[in-house]
Image (cartoon, rainbow, N blue to C red; front, top):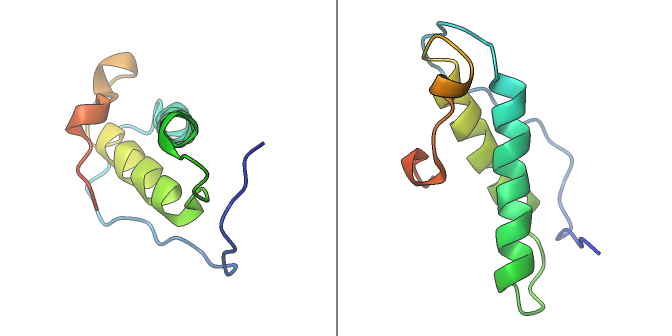
Length: 84
């Protein structure tokens, strides 16, 4: 079961970028978040899931997607998404 570390309720601010096409932004966010969960499950060894880190990573991935036209071709690979 996913256990998130206790988090304060807050809004994650949008990144300031030039938006070209919002197609696939939600899919990218959900996919990047899912990758964070899968990575945590594989590597956690009992550590709490860091929801803030997962959301920030998904936000960065989605912000990269909307800077390109198209759907599948605009989604970055995991390696292309910068760390914090």
